[in-house]
Picture 1 (spheres, rainbow, N blue to C red):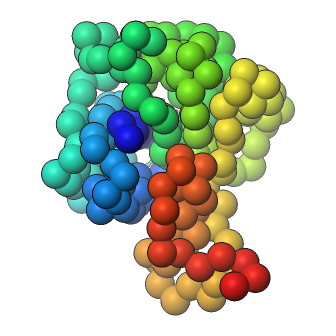
Picture 2: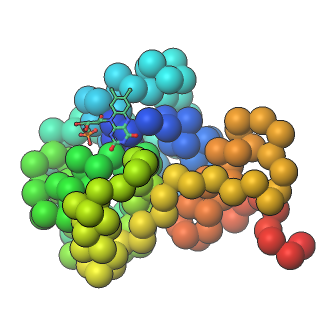
Length: 182
Ligand SMILES: Cc1cc2nc3c(=O)[nH]c(=O)nc-3n(C[C@H](O)[C@H](O)[C@H](O)COP(=O)(O)O)c2cc1C
């Protein structure tokens, strides 16, 4: 599988890092294409000291429209925006393809590929909610960065993984996380 990971300027770079780590570990994943917005780069440096791409990931600049996945003719199997800022959500919902991230999102939706938006903001305005409705109606999956606690996580990584494992489920990648009822 080829997964496209867009990292945008919401708090929660640790979600992107843990997701990248698991994707790199998975035998099912052959390539990870990563794009970071400028704000994401700054926030990830501040929150977690920067992103460690790992061996399977290739980094593309957010203005590189020559990236293969900028076109429906050479798109990957799935795209995840993690974390997804309200600004990026709004541009995607509005069809504003003014960066590689928003162009790739536009392609994911038009090609009906698996497309997961890990939105992070609280509380939500009506504009945010309407934008989430729009991308949902267009075929995207809104998967908020909302951890669960029934697995009794004992550190931040385990809390973060309660979200990351749901993202992996949605992308179709196996993981070692616990499941309700087991
Ligand atoms: C430290 C920091 C944390 C932020 N956290 C969030 C957030 O959780 N959610 C959000 O929607 N925007 C957040 N923002 C604001 C976005 O970074 C800002 O709206 C930016 O324009 C988003 O750009 P991008 O979507 O191109 O990355 C944060 C900004 C900073 C500096």
